Image 1: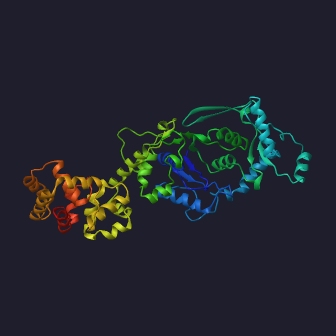
Image 2: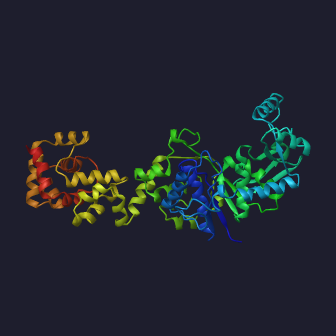
Image 3: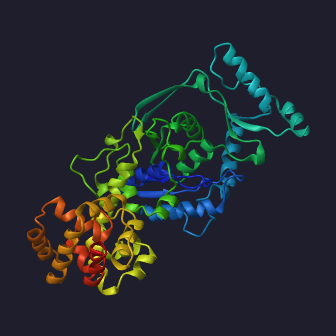
Length: 468
């Protein structure tokens, strides 16, 4: 049996970390089994869905490297993989269910339903549909339609049944049909389908075998199983993954750390870092598993390693994988990742040396720009810490440093050796003032790599400043 997973987002906003992780887990499972990763756009909400969001979510998936083998093509926002173009398909199944008395029109107003739920709660009952319209006659239905009333369509749930399924993550699940009640599968407004109806129908018709989604969808599964069994379609295997929470333990949101994938890309985060982090957010790899390519992540992906507890988002962990991603980029990709201003500031013949020199100390493009300015412009601003260091070192130290610089012609190893002898300084007292005066910072890349990039004349001017 071919494994087919899917990612089925609604284009009602930008893709965030939770959506991206759902897509990633489905893709990794499909890749692991040499199966198919399918993309479907669930745009049945005409008021909130936009073509711009649909296009953006496809761009985001491509940026993350999550290639779908089946689905829409970027730039084409029409076709069978957009639910807004599949209304006739859903209509056929509505007709089938109504013809077999497995669905019926419901004319209850929102106010009537709210009152019914209030009374049920007051009497200690779980709120569910009371079945008011479940047994309307044909003439009663025609009369209400003639009055201009627009009904929803409800699925008729058999009483005293138990719905059982094996969740890929959480094991066997049991639900009582009496706790579910007859539920809406088509809304009254524009006859648009309810999410879990068209979602289930499309999964079955598109041959989806496995679905990984957030645990907030767990209660949708028994409803979808009932629908698919009623129309004789195959039910996929569902796995409900843990929710992502912020550092305060509440569901991840913009308030406690969530970012859209588009925002992360614009801020300079690398796709490889986002993927490596998300792959470990609610899923464990071997202890010694470091930075991995998407292929490696998929080869080690296992359903058995998916956690049931909430996964806590930690921006420091994301930063850790960002640093790993930078060290693994080849020089051409790293160069392209750096901002345009850096590329024009650095002489072509020093490009490779600059990349090699600063790579280990760059996490974001802005940091590369900072080092480019330090190394290739004449003016630098000393940090507060650097100012304290050079003032403590004193005038005599920099006289000796300048003399050593000129005598050694900027060879850093020889410069340090000579300065150690003439100044009597060693360790931090020797290296720190030299770095602070030359770069304006007390930390950074190896000075042996920076000094040749800076050049003898620029270094001389900076040391002369502290001599003067």
